[in-house]
Image (cartoon, rainbow, N blue to C red):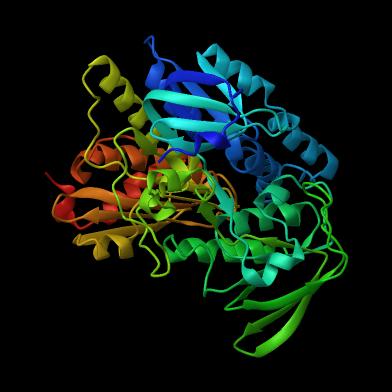
Length: 496
């Protein structure tokens, strides 16, 4: 249902385009680009913050910019014949600032407009069928944007802050990647990807880091050995990791908004609970690395009779009035907003598929075929790096696959052993014994991020393992681990 006409100023300017995208991060940009490229179709990008989104300024890009120099220093420390470099705090933060363009998105705007997309600044809300009302941040009149063909929700996600921490003004991942003031003592609540990466670079910057992890291990969505390797590495850096520990309550004096990456007030005192009982933990700052939620709460879904759960497909809480209705054919959700894997590269892939489908529907061209199996790859840029694609062994069995695994030490090939004199890590593949194809792979070790794509190709292409044996890796490279893994499989799977 459309909003009451009285609520919209008569001076509201109107824009009409074929495709309207709410959210101009990498996912939204890709959706718009693929929907209109090579055609006369038009697209509008609606963005209330920086074009380029979370990944460009507050997540993937700055985190890797912060993590790479300490990783290089760590590698040098384990190689004789070279002087170990030291991390220079100011230079490291300056490198981060360069990679986030000093939080200036003018280059992104120039790219978008050069690609034929119109940028409309402000917060967009759905106002009715194929209609979006955009409210600028400066209080000026809103803009009504109408879509001839499609509206795409690419609004990303927001950090979740648990109730015991909300009054403490904790850091979120934005503050961690945008760090300006390095706290002497930092408590990180959480044990997932953001937590372990932030612990790595904050320790390198000089913080005494304590991690409070509710579960029994780190990186619980990965193979168990991944979290164990990262735990060992963090403890070697001086990070204190307390497993099985929950935050009960907290207090903080002089809570105040000080700006991105600056300490948000006085010292923090947390009451935590573990198997030993309750006790206090103090710090100069606290980082809530406790997950994210799709940013769907203030985008006008109610005007379509929809709820956030309808968009993501999540089960409805009994107290929620979600309808469970299917989405209109003109409405698409992608990236974090769509409830799929909250990874930039996956969101960009899905937006390319959706954008092409919108273009095909508008132009009559044949839709591009999508492979039956498209696995989700992921990298955690700790040291050692953790990379995975597809299913873990446990997930594969739960999905009904009959599987066998092969596992070797990351140092099990000459090429990987040469990376450092004491290489830590593990490589594992999960193979479906019926199809004789990979369904999952995990590599934990130095520079493992550069190895995982071969597993992604093998799973996407459903290449039988007896064929993979004929893909010859160069010597001496980390890719030799593939030979070791394939040789560990039962012989009946390795022959045609």
